Image (cartoon, rainbow, N blue to C red; front, side):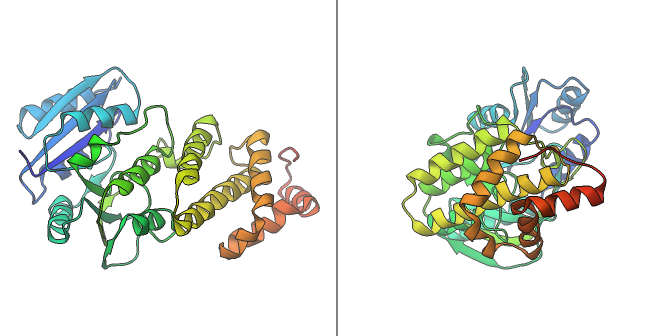
Length: 311
C-alpha cells in the first residue's frame, strides 16, 4: 500500500499537463501512486496520460466519458490504495516536497487531514492544529486555508463516509470538506505554500457568471449550515454568504457577467443582512453604498457611459 494516492482529474489540459505530471513525478516522497482520470478529453490529454504512465509504474490512467470533475475525482478515490489521498488539478503544479511535508505533518500530529497553502493566496507561515469546528471556521475565513481540494491530504477512510456530490458543478470542494471535517478529530494546517495554482482564461475561478450551478452549490452549503449546531461555524458561514452575494451584486453593477435575476437575488440577501458589512473591507463598504442607493448607482453608470439594467 503506498503512503499517498494522488488523484489528478484531466480534461483538455494538453498545454499544461506535462508540467503538472513532472512536478508529481519529482516528489521527494517516492512512495506514492498517481491516478490520472481522463474525463473524456477531446485533445491529446488522454494520450499524454497513457504515455507518461507507460514510463513510470506509479502512474495509472482511467479513461471516462466526460462527466465532470467531481465524478472524475470520485472514480480516482475509489481506485486509491494509499493511506492518505491528495488531489492535483491538471493545469497546476506542485513543489517537490509538498506531499512529503503534508504526510509528515499528518503523521507527526496524528491528524486525519493535512493542509498547506496555495501560492496565489497566502502570505504567512506557521503550524496550526485544529479540531473540526475550528477547521470549518477557518475554511470560511478570508485569511484561512479556503475550501479547495488541491491543498489537502486526507486519510483514505474518511471517504468511506462522503464523496464529491456529482450533481454540483461549483463549491463541491467546500461541501465535501465541510462534511469531512465533521468526521475527523484533528486537522493540521501548515501555512507555507507548496501548491502552484495557474490562473488562465479557462479556469473556473476566472468565470464570474452567476448561474444556476453556482447557486446550487450555495444552496447545498446553506443546507449544511441549517444542520450545524456550533454558533461560531454558523457565524463564519453567514459572513461567507454575505460576501458571496455582495460580490455578485458588485459584479452586476460593474458590468461583469451577472444577470438581473442574479442581481435581484443578491440585492435581497445583502439588504436583509446589511449589518454584516461592518466586517467587510473598505472596498466592499464603498460598493455597498453604491448598491443600496439607486441615485449613486445611476451616477456611476452615467460616468461609465453605460447602463446595466435595473433592480
